[in-house]
Length: 192
View 1 (spheres, rainbow, N blue to C red):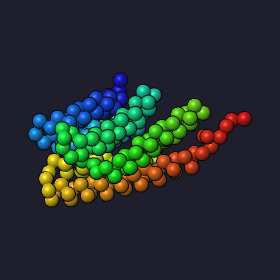
View 2 (view 1 turned 60 degrees about the vertical axis):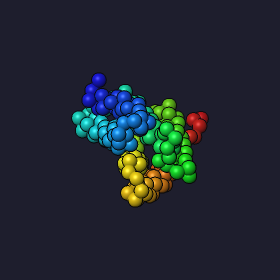
View 3 (view 1 turned 180 degrees about the vertical axis):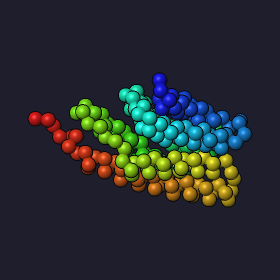
View 4 (view 1 turned 90 degrees about the vertical axis):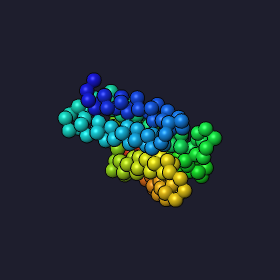
């Protein structure tokens, strides 16, 4: 197993670590620790892709695992932030469930779309808007986690910034998903 694939596997291993640090409120600064774990895990996404492309280490295993690891990491973060740990307040307000639903729906739709394309021998690479979307999502999640660690004023400011970033990520999610389908609509045409 090459280095990029090891980094992808590490990202998958860090998902339950992230969730555990989020929920174990007996740990001091658990939200801050979970933010650090999330940032480290998310950074392996950028690093594994860079190394794989630069050193020609792209493998079928990497093509399979990398998008799954990315989607599960973000989905886990968004879902746990909607859930109230130990009777406290959830990080995301109830209306943010719309953002989460849109983001998760797009990921499922595009994953299915990519499977159909692959069955026809086509590869749908991530576009620039999709990469920006991923970055903004990761930043939003990190800001919201760090903000949850603080009380009163700084929490409110970070929460607002994080929610705005998540709203922007949701908008980018819709744009990138729509672009991916429109640019590759031929994938959905039946072969005759």
